[in-house]
Length: 334
Image (cartoon, rainbow, N blue to C red):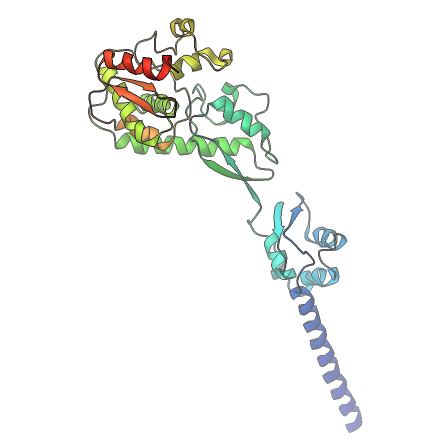
């Protein structure tokens, strides 16, 4: 009897040792680095389950002991995350456990998409159409249909999307980026309008958006924005026309080929500020925050005219005579 007990005890000890050794070996396989020599993009397909992904990783040579990963669902089911569809970057030296945790996280690979200040809504839509791996749900839709999908029916889209760099992941839709840009512009415009000067010749945030778009299209020099806003303010206060070339270009639409003629300046469009009084009916581009702030906080002064020097900056004048001399110097001579 004693001999039987000893045998049972020895067997139990050996079984325990074997079980412990097996457990440690299993742990070591999960802790081993995955077989990638450089950052490697891996996509979890939509609807793919854990075991399917493990088999796929093994077939690609990323992991060797797929049994160890399948066993994880039995021994430590709480350690198996619900995998999320998307692209992930597998890094050299990453353990199998770290990889599984990554595939169940929100750390998907993202891509930048930059909307430059001064672009039009048409240009933004073209960029979205060309963005790789972005789900384009607005292709073929009119601007009106796009705005309806954004819950902004009867809103003209120009100017309402904040220019910035946005990030997206594979499968994300262009509508999501449009909605982000729209909400940001609405929020920033409200903030800027709340901090406006009291003696502005404009009466609403939308008019500030229109004016900011003119400023944005007139100059890329940060130090000039408030001075150009000041010129526009004084012109409106005196009943002078704004006479800004970007409005002529916008009114020409696709007919514009890089040059404005005298006939273009005289053409009666609803945007041509050489012909109409006051501002155009809508923005002509997407202004950045600096132009929005300049529109509601123009620089005091006496200048009423400005002309491009040809280097991205402008010459500002107080009188028409001084302005004509500047035009001769910077435009006609050039």
